Length: 257
Image 1 (cartoon, one colour):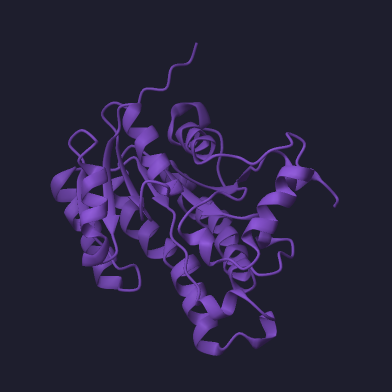
Image 2 (cartoon, rainbow, N blue to C red; image 1 turned 90 degrees about the vertical axis):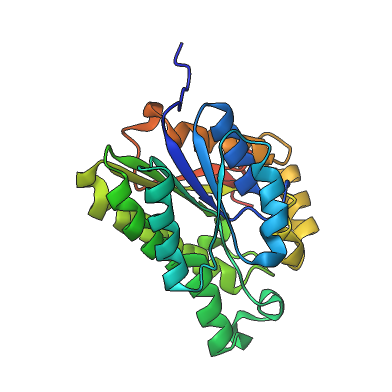
């Protein structure tokens, strides 16, 4: 038996929007395994919602962070050092694109919309890892969330697929750069899950239906299944795994059609 015990470890989770978020499923699962959790919220509109979730966890911390502001990202890690001392796990589960850029043709994406999608969905991982690394004094695990559209065409995902491709390259590059510090950087490529963000994807229901029909397991996945993979990546069971994109999609990624 290899029980996963994260007692004494601290994890910060970026991207909890509500109780259906993949980020929340991960936070809850890590907490159940003994980790102390810090959650961030983007703005005052989301603060109460995130605070209510944090209240269900033991000794959780909540911190403001608009990831489009470098100063706020830096401040989060300064607060984490003050309140937690060290960090073992960082989960990057944030992405954004304008709704109009998730429909129609990719070629119609404007410069500002392209920049916004890449900045929020991909660039933000870089400063987060930069500021988290000094707190990972005994090594650590960085987990980013991606999707199969990074390498395949999903009509309606458009510029977000480009952003996820960039994110996956960052995972490989950062794994190389921080491996000597004992910091592992991986991504989970999750199949379609009903979340607040998914509602903004044109054709999401068709995407979900196609996955269930064609995946070897003949079903969709759950947020809890993604969370269990994040638990593995957060634990000592995955100390030899870095720079990897792990599919959690009921096997859909292996199918030719």
